Length: 318
Ligand code: CUA
Image (tube, rainbow, N blue to C red):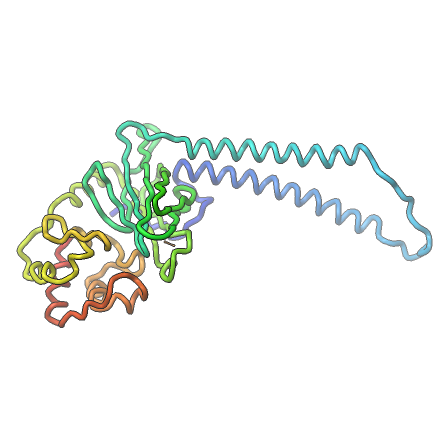
């Protein structure tokens, strides 16, 4: 479908403009630190070997030296120069990453962190989804950066997809912004990087980078209204599912839980917890607390018949 799943989330394997800037800065800092380590450890080892106590004349002290202007100037000036270089390089990357303004027509996405899942809205496209951010691939001839507005519905979370950008926090009542510009198609994995409660570790994130054509097709599919008429639809709408979940074109308009209009088009359930298979969907509906203890969705105590109908209906929401 959309290429490989990049399962190892490595900041040095950057495939997006802000992540590449951060990776090269990290390499510079590491190189400077390695050079300092080698120089200091080298002098130390040389000194230990060269000036170790000779066994023959144990009582004689070596010549004593008091002060050296040259050495003191050197060990003051060199570190100051190193600090200046690192400061300037860091300031340049921070400016590059933080001062970027959206080009006209750039893709805008609002990401809302919840305990423990990601609400993903494309306000200009009329698409709402969860946990899987779809974006078009960028190339030098057609830069297509995606700009994210980060909000939180409850506590602080942090949006981190290491191959695409540095982490940015989602703070209640304080929207933050960030951007990504992936240049490789595929699925990139990320996670919430700020401890946000019991299931913080199961607040996983996927960014699906697609060709512009595939992305347009995905948007079309997500905008299409789900079909009516399934037996289970009436049952679903009669239960309290609708207080938390929305299905486009129905009376279900809840916003506490993920939008279910196209739930079957997603790869995972429970924010990356389990693959989205019909068997797993059924287990999830029967008792979400067994699979992800502490999440907001209670065991709805559905009868077997209700479970069949709700599961049957949701399975049609592609
Ligand atoms: Cu959300 Cu940690």
